[in-house]
Image (cartoon, rainbow, N blue to C red):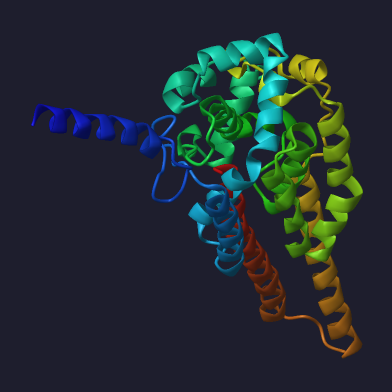
Length: 322
């Protein structure tokens, strides 16, 4: 009996390593590498990348699918290269060691509002207040296997609003597309490059501005600027924003809100002039009701444009949370 028991124990002890050494599969998934991590097999990653791309195309409101697409396309090459860029930089190495998180609590937004207006902190919080956004909305990374690389992606997400603030680009479709092009040239993350294709969905005048002004600015500045991920923003909150732009090598693009407002004004003026000329040709003077109708149509067109931008921004904001 003793010999039989020993033999069974030997067999079990020999079987255990074999079971633990089985190849990674759906039925033999390894433990997570960090809290919230979901390990994926190669086929699973490809399937999820393709499926999330298709679902995002069919229903752009699926922010979870857009985030999934971002993570499944970032590794192994792109996010590792970005991590190595940080490791080669002294500040980048400090960020990776400390792993700070950017939230409304860690930055103390009330304190930032008390800083001089020319500082990075004041510029950042003024941009948050103007655009009505919060640093607390960035989703946690789940599908990047390496824990350090997962933090790099998280850091990119949480620093995105600093890039908005330092470039002055607003949260409108043109602004997001231009910033995504800048980020792609600076970081090389695939999702930022894919987002640039949103330029195909904007109106003709907006596309013309992008092609002539903002995309050339984005590519030129993204390539020539220092890596924005190597900035310890938490330590630079009292730095002059102009000094930081000069240090990074970032030129300020033309004010996009001003350009858009001027374009809308010209469009409204053109509609009013056309209506007045048509009425004069008919031999009658425009009445108050006709003038009000022209203004109402212009306002309606602007409301429709704002609604289109709002829906598009929901998509782009979800892409930021990837």
